Amino acid sequence: MMEYCHPLDRVCGLKYCLTNKYLDYQFKPSPENFIVEEEVDRNSLQLRSGRARYLVLLVDKKGVDTLYVARELAEKLNISVGSIKFLGFKDRDSHSIQFFFIGDIAGIDLRMGEVVAESSRYRVKAIGCTDSKPTQELLIGNKFKVLIDDAGSLNEVRQLLSELVSRGLPAYYGYQRFGTIRYNTHLLGKYLVKGDLSSFVNELAFSIYPRESLEGISSRVRREFSLKSRLVYEAKLMRLIKKRDLSKVTKLLERRVKRLFIEAYLAFLYNNALNKYISVHGWVDDGEICVTGASCTSGAEYYEDIAAAESLNIHELAKNLGSLGVRGWLRKVRMKLLEPKAYVENGKLVVEFRLTKGMYASVVLRELFKHNYIP
Image 1 (cartoon, rainbow, N blue to C red):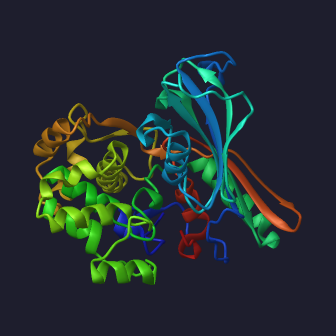
Image 2 (image 1 turned 90 degrees about the vertical axis):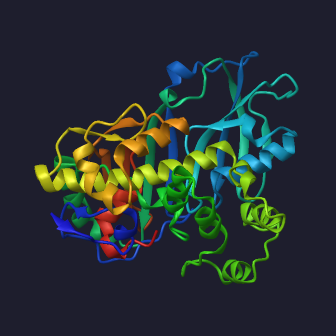
């Protein structure tokens, strides 16, 4: 075991790496080299061509995030973006295939197989209807395909994959849970949990991160944001600031975005709790730790140090989370790599693997590339 193998580790609470081996090759995910395919339980989904409670869409996107496509689709269909459900956020820096679900489809007339929306960056196709509610129970996991411009490392990759399969990886929440350009989603969640709206506003709108675009930094320095830019929430927030009305700040956020921030903070706490678990028990086993919430507070001993560092009382935290509707859940401490393959195709080294739901490919890439991984 080794500690802190990537510059973002201390920010996100990741500490341990399985081995000191890594590929001497810089890898930055992009739609050309990182492909993600969502896997659902088709038996539970029970797709059919006739009318049902939900319309099911297959989304094939490149270089844009999930919410971007949902907003574009909502505008095209003249529905609220909140009526579009999905099973997980997929990275902008990927070629990803995932499912969307639209309820209350009485006013939407689409033929199965019809392309609903299309641009240079995404394609949305109707594939059927279902009465199955789009919950996490439908999601099995994700299949990943990574293309590397270093075919000569085939044997090295196979050896690393073999070690990952036999020993497993710490089931950390990956970098994208916290943001890789503005790595602060957990901080925003922390301020929401604590009810500290002033700090939330400052962090969301005015904090500056070195990987952000010059345009974004300039907007934050000048405190001027356009609704037509990617900084939509910042623009809406400035309107409230000018009106001196911060009481409506959290109402600006879509429910799932607010939840995303809060769960990012819980992920940060969990990552640190997992570090404590490993320091106590050695290399991880098949145990579980609570991702803390109102109904899941066991394992408090793993959270004590980080809670104190965050000026938190673990029981008060659970109470606050309960008021926000966050119940907590158990999470495995070990991630298992499923069906890994490594081969050379068209001059590229191809790595394929599957992960169960809730597990992060970035944790696998961190292990393969260490500091050479550029999320």
